[in-house]
Amino acid sequence: MPIDPDFQAHRSAQVHGNRKVGHDGDSSKLGIYGTDVAVDFDLCVGDGACIDVCPVNVFEWEGEGADRKAMPSRERDCIYCFGCEAVCPKFAIRVTPLVIK
Ligand code: SF4
Image (tube, rainbow, N blue to C red; front, side):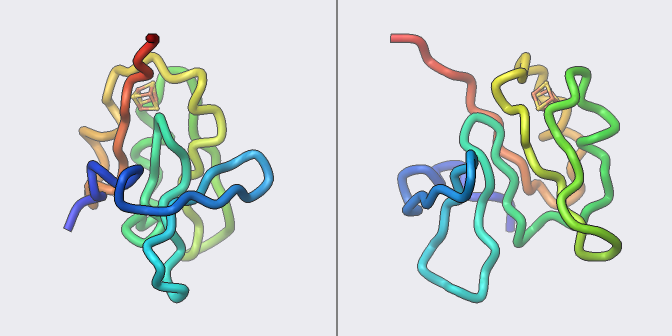
């Protein structure tokens, strides 16, 4: 199952440091990190495809070894090329362009 494309409506966001994490009420799950560029940590297998493809280095590693995840630490730098969504083998990433109102 891919990341829920409507996760921002379906999940309650908690702030951890300077990051928002969307939880679905299941405390055993890691949650979805980020907003404009979001990574479902319960799906991410840490293969690094998004880190390799991103032209503006939005992602950085969080954790080590088999437990490492791709953290969208600089999502405000995203240029919305959607490369990360395309290469993720687990469909764990959702990119939502900012709408200026
Ligand atoms: S959409 Fe493109 S620029 Fe934005 S995080 Fe993904 S790979 Fe990087």
